[in-house]
Image (cartoon, rainbow over all chains, first blue to last red; front, top):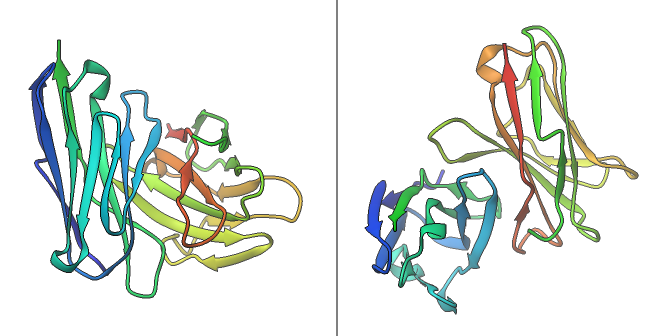
Length: 109
Length: 113
């Protein structure tokens, strides 16, 4: 099956800093989603982005399907951005996503 | 997150007991997915169901685990004769169509003593 690798595994930021999270995948993509799992365990949809660029407030994402990667940008980070960010990719003939291991983000005040 | 409901939120069972996890999808969604998350790991797909049908159960253990999504009522993930290794967070997601965004519920944290 498809391999999904996220980097960095851990990230510590000062409030106000910007960051880029990366998701590499090993096969052609049918769909790709970014999620934020908050410290209480809730999974929150951020983007559905099999290709192209999307923006939502301080967050934006870009997927370059031909080069098999996606990037999540967080600008002016806030303490509420803390949590784990997952990339989930479906490929081949399947629309069932495979999740990466996540990037754990801590934003200090 | 668009109204996927799961209950209970926390469940404690002793080894050998049965665990029943319930999921009510977003109103109008007929596609339901179950995932398991072990500590410090991402989510692993278990089973995909449409109303009254199991479409893909490739991620679900062959023994002790079963899932259903009846015509009426919530989807049920059932674990018989639980063991300590079943302790995990179990998430349900739903979508309007297979190719659409999946919306996740809050999860059920199962602890097996």
